[in-house]
Length: 162
Image (cartoon, rainbow, N blue to C red):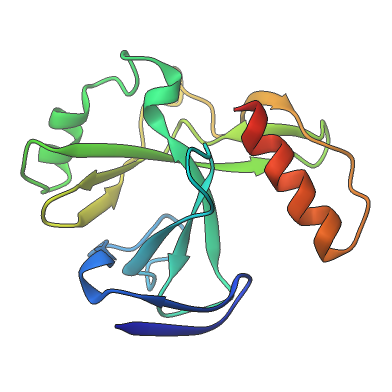
């Protein structure tokens, strides 16, 4: 077991086999090569890709399949091959955030994460910026009210709508 101390979720213990290896790191975070996917409840659309190295760093992510069977283009198998990842069982995750100006939930469709499930190897790939947006709007985000309990309630409300 790996114990990650001081995350936004408190201390977290994960099985070593659940670590996803990103040999080249993530865009803007080349040193972040080991992450784990934390699912914050059954059936929730948003999970968190938690850094093993940097406890304060966790990326909210959702399944790329939510954006249709044409996403990403080129297909995930081709992207995985280009990224040096083999295998047939591939997952696509996209990082989500609340856009500051519009206060809407946005997904980074430009740079998805391709993960080979069996080997737990991943890569972030950059797609064609003429086709995909780094902040594609999804839905309105709730207004902030402050406090941890309120923040948890807002996250649960976003997940329930998804």
